[in-house]
Image 1 (tube, chains in turn green, red, yellow, orange):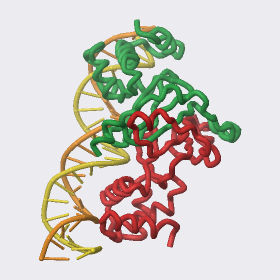
Image 2: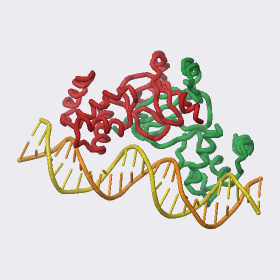
Image 3: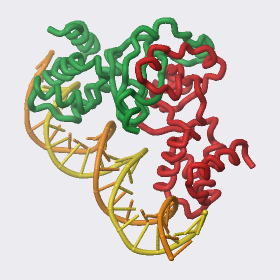
Image 4: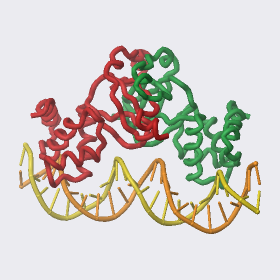
Length: 143
Length: 143
DNA sequence: GTGATTGCAAAGGTTTTGCAGTAAC
DNA sequence: GTTACTGCAAAACCTTTGCAATCAC
C-alpha cells in the first residue's frame, strides 16, 4: 500500500466520513502523482484506473473534502487551474508563466520568515511558502 | 495624471503598440486599484468610467499585453480568478482560502532568499515572493 | 433501513476566440 | 490607406450544483 494511504483513510473515519471506493481511488491516484502537483483532471484520469465508474464531479468533491480535512492543500497558481499537493507547513515553488507547471524547490523552503505580525492580528496561517514566478527552461527557449 | 501613467504609456509606443483610449482607460483604472490586487472584472468596471464603450474582452487582451510588456504581473491565486499587481521584483502576500482576497505584507518582502540554484539551471526568474495561505480575520470568524 | 455519497447532466463563472467594423498610425 | 485594435457574441474552459439512484454504515 502506498505511503500515507492508511493514515489518511483513518482520518476520514475519524471525521465520520464514509470509506468509499471512489475516495480510496482519488487518494491513491493523488499519492501516485503528488510529486507533480497534479490538477483535478490529472487525478481523475489516474483514479479511473482504480475505480472505473468514477465521475469528475466526485473527484472535485473528494479533493475539497481532503482539503477540509487537512490531508491535501491547494497550490497557489497563476493559470487559474487548481493544483494540489500534500499538506505541509512550508516549502517553495517555481511557477511557470507560460505552461503553468509547478516545480518543487526542495532545499529553499527551510528557513522562511513566517510573518509574526499576521498571527497577532487575527489571520490564521495554514501555510507559508516561497513562490518564484518566471519561465521554466523549456518554455524560455520557445518564447 | 496618476503615477506611472506616462512612463507605462511610453512603453507601449516603444513596442510599436497603439495608444488607444481603451488601453489608457485600463491602465488608469489599474493604477487606481493596484493596491487592492484587482481582478479583470474590477478593472473593467473601473475603466468603464474612463471609456464608456469598453468591452470586457478588450480588458483581458489589454491586461495580457501589459503582462507581456512587463508593466503588470499576475498574482498567484488559490481561487482560480486572475488578479494583477504592479510589476515588482519581490514582495509578499497573504491569500485567504475562503474569500480569495489578497493582502499585501509590506515589511516582510525585503529579505527573501532568491534561490540561486534556479537561475543557474535555466529558469528565468521574474519575481520572488513569500505567499502565506490561510484564513483572513473576517473569514476565520465565519467558518 | 437510513442518510451520506455517487454519477450524470446542466448550470455557473471566468477567460478566450472569431469576425466584421473602426480608428490609430 | 493599412493594419492593429475593438466590441460583440459565441465558444471554451474549469468547477459547482441539483437530483434521482446507490451503497456504506
